[in-house]
Image (cartoon, rainbow, N blue to C red; front, side):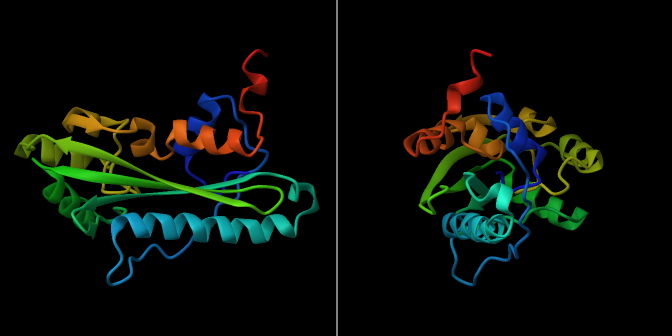
Length: 198
């Protein structure tokens, strides 16, 4: 089970041969706590998504023996969490904060096994943006690609042209760090490679 409606997370799982039996989107309040760091926010949100989806699973007999995977991605500049841009003003704010500097993308994953065991991991990736020119800045805002994206950008889209350097997990910036996700799944006995040979 994947506790997400994100097409990017689903595509990443499919990339490594995993097809979730069901999608259980778990919407939670993503407002950061007053002193909450971006890392802690990502971890808390992945835990809350997993817990919410797990309650649905327990009340659905066909899903009670499934693995459940939840994840959340937060873009941080220092101790400040960038919003998931839903408005043009938020997108402008994010671009202004990220232009010409480095930021950290935190993606937390929370795995719940059929036995109820919980495994977690937070993956950090450093990303450096070029200094955006006015034409780049306004063209990206007009594209609308920022809508619904953590930090107001999607590295796998147009904003990939802004990235000077990345240190860490590219797939983690997209929304699901594949190496760490597969490691957790395999560690709990999930047959990740069962479909690799057809």
